[in-house]
Length: 334
Ligand code: GDP
Ligand code: MN
Image (cartoon, rainbow, N blue to C red; front, side):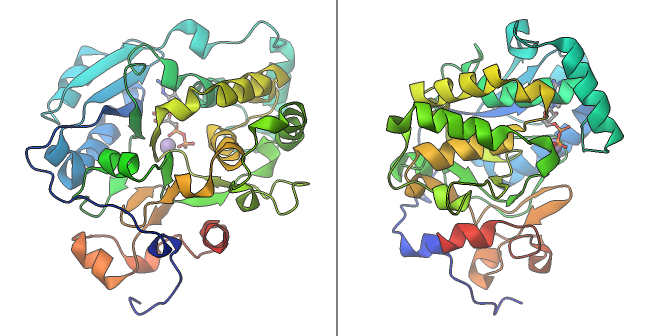
């Protein structure tokens, strides 16, 4: 399997890696974890692999966020998983509630309908608040405001290769704004009017569009959205992009349209579309060397040198990269 040949576009770029991490200062970055108290044990398992594969070498602080108060047990147990600093924040209600212009009866009706249609998370109200929070607010939460870089971590995920360089230094040095490991197709029933709303936005703000963007990744001609998105349960990025005027305007435009509640717009397509409109394509990076699993998909490096170099415990034959539904081939063809 390791003999497989494919063109990894990162090989065409000169990227700066610095493996000398001892006695170095950290960048202004944090591990951001939105999580519920009930998810403690699967979060501890994520943290164990994340610490062993990466963070025990770098000691980046964790910021845990919740729409409810964290329990004493949650706080004690997560502190016990790391030597790094840990912070616990409550999400202000404005960031986790209905804006005034949303008709909640209509929203309830839409949830019922999507539940009947068996759309994934279609009937869930909290899931919608979660997606809206991740789309428009996490980066301006009072505990996150001070940071420049973030790595999003979820309960129940796995990291299957060593990461021996400071990923935040890496993205800073290489002028990378966003990094991903898995790209796939969105369930189209969750976003019936998202693309039309995006088109209205681009008509109103043509000056925001980037000429060297990754637009082709999400749409061939601009007419339709191909549903490709970066899977946002893993994200490494520059928070200042989400705080930029362009993105805030974009989020507010989408928020006004109501699709977070009347449909079930996910933060993954919302993030991806913004990245593909506003950034240079070189500012988006595929982290081939970070092996990551979030049920039901995983990315595992298939090159022998990368696999052995990272002491990986994943199976390259299980990698999602070139299987049905993956958008990585279309990323590579960019
Ligand atoms: P999936 O990955 O799309 O299946 O959705 P998840 O259930 O994993 O939710 C995505 C992230 O948001 C995870 O980190 C969850 O812990 C978190 N999350 C989802 N819903 C809530 C919620 O109601 N409250 C809090 N505090 N976190 C949530
Ligand atoms: Mn998840």
